[in-house]
Image (cartoon, rainbow over the protein chains, first blue to last red):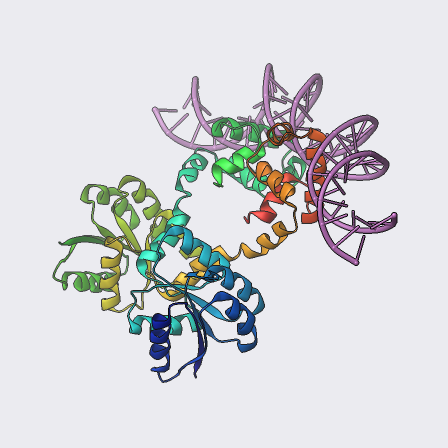
Length: 208
Length: 208
DNA sequence: CTGAATATCACATGAAAGTGTTAGAAGCAA
DNA sequence: TTGCTTCTAACACTTTCATGTGATATTCAG
């Protein structure tokens, strides 16, 4: 089972080095390489490689933007970022654009090979320090979760319905209680959360 | 530089195996082990280990719940899940509860040692297949991003104000337009998004 | 047992939000 | 020019929401 790979990287020597790393592996084939995003966006949809290694900063555009466009056309292709940068901004943007892996340029050839294999097998290769940054975005909700704890079970239940956009009437029906009871609970919720509207309450509890 | 580690795992043989893996390493010390969450929540705050390996399913409670409680008291301690399960539910819950790593029980002793080291050094050790599940939650926003593109600049501006919970009157003042105009824009926004309330619109655009 | 917390229900009032319809001004493209 | 889109604005009407001020029942800990 062979893997077809493409490289998008403006630096000639880095690109050459990547290609030789890839072609040095028995089942890996570098089927196309580009030094600018435009050519890549134009040609890759016809080539449909399994995996593409993508640099972020290139003269002529961002590799992230290229991924955003290509992922719509060839969603089965896996994109791995290959960048010197490790900041939250780039990582987050890359992942939302459709990248499934994130390598730093200091990665060894062995790591690169392993990452390509991982991505092709449905994994998301990334260093554990990058994973931490991804994970930490999940944990920023902890502040909000404290305020939710002051609510009773019934109140939390109603809050979740509010979050889904149900009207008081609908909530009442779903919970087999009167609309007046729903009102009362919501009044208490708002008081505990120190807000005075549905949207404010949701913003307070479920972050922005 | 040595690392103090604790183990929370109900299965006696697995726990013993973990402990021997840890103590077999030069700079690792297993300073405490527990076979149930209650004892761990009671004793760990005084012990303050650097890293804790935590099983999810135990008679007496969930390891995830234990992490949730402990992380508040000893936030510097790193928690690594050690579970047979690899489903979205558990992974997501564990990370929001405060776990920074996620290992499956099939991990080799070498991987375990490496994971402990990673977690202690600020990383989030996890397999690339688990990372993929984390990453995919980021990418689910793509559907929403398409619907936002159909909105005009002015409409998007108003949508953002809606998201912050401002009332029509406030939005009108901020944007130097009449409240009637705000209404009109919002009517158009709702039509484009195929919704009929503020909350529904926000859920549609800014994921749930 | 008693009081606090929770859950339930009610009525009144005004503010806010949503719906239907219409319409003028500006800009841009065919 | 004609037509389309966007931004702007207004009026009428209905529904939903927020607030104030009550009340009763249940549960559970001290």
